[in-house]
Image: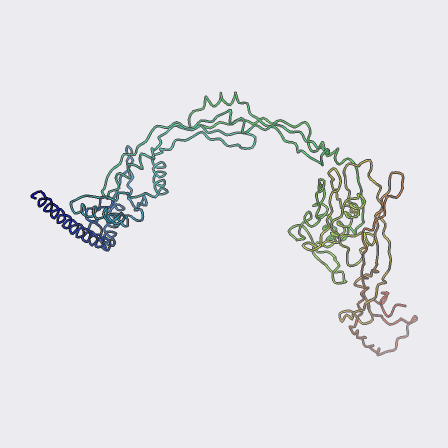
Length: 558
């Protein structure tokens, strides 16, 4: 019976204790949650928190930021004296671009606010029992500004070791032997500076080490400067391939090493480059590649019309010697260049608007037309050509090629297996265009035929001229007939048999009018003065006639 009563009493006690525990646990949870919410919503950093050793506990983020900036400004203004023997250089944190990383205050504020509720409450509770937490990231230095400081020290104290150097000057190598010196231990210096960025004035001994210069590796130098001679050559097996000659060069390595060994630090020596001449040069190949005349053509010009003759000479000189490799295209405008006074051209006659007027570079179409005929006779591929508006007198209709810089060009392509060379000569009233190359066994004979389909007679235009005396006339423009023509290229084999007859072009040329100026200026007849006494000469005289009476255009001439 007693056992039953004792058992019931223990059971009631246990239930009471469990109830008390539940109540205490509930209170603890309520207090903890309330404490956690209060911590989360607080705008202040926990007690015991510091940033880079600076106590910011109990401060708002704004207050902590201001306090941290004060510390940073103190570091920026703090002076560090860098010394090396008698040399001293004072710098500040500002000179080194000292700064703090972003987010330091945010990291401090988040302490005790990033874990679960229990962990954060534990952190907050122990912060009140003097538990310290330091956000220690430190300040940073601008690396570029630090390098500026190091460079300045090198210049001031001559701490830079001087390596061997060499330069190639024409046919010689100039070597300057370096010197040993002091080298600043940059990493060690930077660590010392970081350790002393505390806003206080301090002195740092610049750490240096003895450094030897980098010496020239003569084996490597020989390989870098050695040039093997290459003979000029060409091949037509897989298309045309041309190799330009290369002059070889080298230096006496053994003699250079010996001379260098006798050289003192800081002194200079020269090594002569030895030239090796190639056995076969381009000039030698020219005698092979351009040994045959593929075609030549000539036109005549008035050498006494000096401006026009000058323009022909300039254009021919610019073209002369041009080499075209297989499939390469020639552009007249590109090779001759813009027609300017600077480029040597002068004013001369050109066709414009149905009249002959003066224009810069006038006459150079004669060179392009002469070359065009040589190109046709060489059976080269014409890729761009235009006829003049009016017929020129130096070639047959259909065999001219006009050019205007920037708009009308004359182009052709080397469609042969080997290169061609163009020779253009203007001399003694003859313009000559010759194309050289290698004749192939199956090259056809080329004939160019111009057929006039229609002739358009010229007209005569008269213009009144008030500056010319009445009754006189003056021809200011000679006439030219107009034409419609066709030009054919006829290919024949070695026996004279016709292979093909191809229409090259069909061209139309406007007639050029004869322009005659007619004088309209009135001429006053002088009054006849009667003599006071009638003369009785033995031979009567005829009245005097106006000046120019014997001119064919004079109304007095019969």
